[in-house]
Image (cartoon, rainbow, N blue to C red; front, top):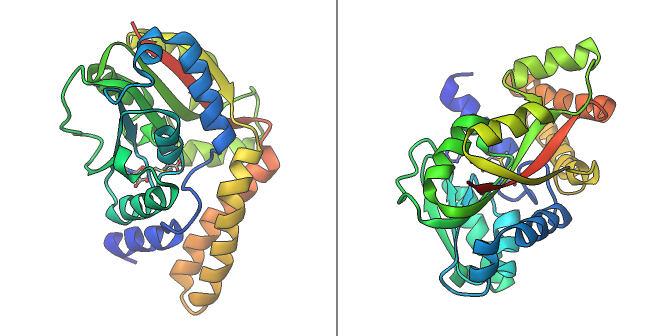
Length: 261
Ligand SMILES: C[S@@+](CC[C@H](N)C(=O)[O-])C[C@H]1O[C@@H](n2cnc3c(N)ncnc32)[C@H](O)[C@@H]1O
């Protein structure tokens, strides 16, 4: 399979029709909003005005974007580089009655082409790893107004001494993965104050993400039953799910909440 074909197949697996495209759930998004609202005077002052500007980096098909639009007045710029995700996001936003508050923005997050000091809140669920945690924090800091707030969920080690099979798998999948104290120190070094953090519950991995994804993989296994390369690809995604099933005590997604210092 060539590179272009592999990318196309990746999008066939992670289809816009899935409930969401990474671990997370509504309860966790709302919990993160509440922690930030308690901490950030900037956001509190602006929270109920149409002037509030929010950026959702790597928004995908918009599970968290729609929550943000429901929760706040103002505008949410929904940035992603895959048009079908943005189209599905807007379809869902219309169904939920919040489309007028969301601006889909098809861009590469490496070069967002947005004004410095222009957002009160930046959100990124399971996406900032694309440019790297610290690099992403630095890019977003420039886009935030002074005192602006940021929420990022990031894959982290939760316990030391994970079994070798788990360590090997994640070293291949996400070599930059580190632990919570190291990420908290990265956050401070990038010019933010830590406002809080929490580990996403296992339900946030299964409910809207791995369970529907597993169903989709079964369908695709049948569709591509005569295609060994695609079947091998599917096997890799299933392996990722099984690693989490067996070793979820050792790693997880952590939601980090911070304020531009
Ligand atoms: C793991 S998904 C998370 C999506 C969503 N936040 C969620 O939790 O369902 C990562 C998202 O980042 C987007 N993405 C990947 N590379 C990107 C890039 N270079 N620029 C913008 N978006 C990118 C993907 O299209 C995808 O929607």
